[in-house]
Length: 308
Ligand code: SF4
Image: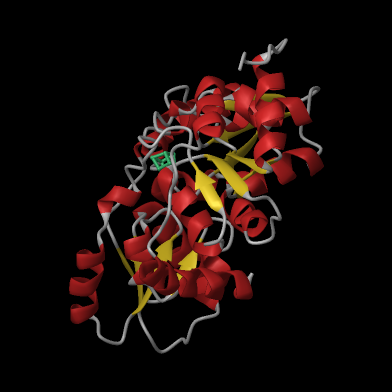
């Protein structure tokens, strides 16, 4: 049968989406065209909450692999698709399930809190999950007499340690797209834009030196909400530059300056509109976490969702 003709690639995606009863989820770091066509756009926590409630049969997840895994864990009966299976995460790859098992042996009384940027296998070895927007709240809720083993992001963990004063042991992982942001460059931008508010993601490598300089330390979702409410007209944004698309669209009269033009995640940028079409046409690439692993990995995620 001849293929239908569409005026735009976006029209074709919408038609395929209806045909498959699919919902399109996109992370704030996706390219602008994907953000614009997404049904739900947000940070990891928001997208996890959407996934837990969707009625769609198919979830097309435009983000990276651990996010699609989380969607599969929370919604095992749905078909979860990724436009490109190579959209991984350097930070998530910095810790394994075996690493956690060894670390636990050193601190048998420890509580393992894993950032959501981890594989399903690591989540299955964890007691609690957290995102950058709720990490402080999750750690604050845990028994005070037990040490916390925080994986994998050293900078987010350092931020949580400073905010909570808790006994936290830190894994030495980092996100290359965030650690490229240097404290010296932020200082220079602040001198050039004295009226600008400085919003920083806690994964930033400049966190330990510049945290005290940040007007706000926020998740990507927190940054988007804050920029809308603030009376400031100018902002320096320390996170992956994909977020600027939405901030500029939401606030056309305000100016957003990236803390580093180099803060670009190559994994997030692997997804394209064309790959979304192929994904919905061919039902590729499905991400399915095996049942036994999913059951173990679901527990720390559910504990997080209950706390938040
Ligand atoms: Fe992973 Fe960093 Fe890319 Fe996020 S921005 S997906 S933490 S590599």
